[in-house]
Length: 285
Figure 1 (cartoon, rainbow, N blue to C red):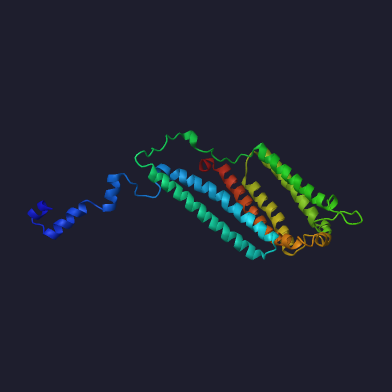
Figure 2: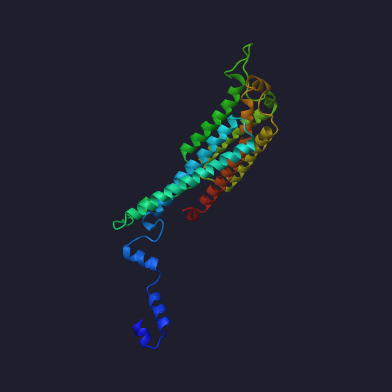
């Protein structure tokens, strides 16, 4: 400061300039004391982010689904049940995120002076590059899933475990659906199995297969949602035999259309993504 004053700078200005050259006192103190001036630094940040993504993606949907099921069993209104489950799920997500952040922040500060450097990275640490190839495992899984779907349709009608006083089975689904819609869904399941085999024989997704996948999803989703929305699913015998649980089951059925539509949209998007990756391998990699 004396040098600045001697050079002709006014005393107050010289003092301000000299102090200003030291910078922000908090930053200066953090640098000198090796105290982190951030919540979570580069040493732990990527571990923190990975853990946060894994935990939140598992906990939030699980809490939401469990609470929604509990609300449905309790007979709550569908929109009230969804809102309540969503509120609690968001609250849990915030709490989980907060405490994970606190834990990493504490580690960041208690490891001062012995803060490790990021471990050596190797390209082998990278996950496998997604491909559009269709494997045998997913094909077998698809075939078994559709066979199970067909089996359940037949089983619920003819081999139901609950019987009437006369020994007749009580179907879950309305027998009137056998006039068209249940055979329709069985045929769709057979077509889906054929589609899975063609997809496996082709070895990868194509634009034509992606569009066929759209048609198959529409053929299932539209009538399924319409039947549930118009309350044509449960049989009168089942309603009478299980009058106590039918209200809760009907609430659950109101949620199912959203699940069906969501799964269909996801399947369609995945089909087009895989088709794009197959025709543009450089982009996919």
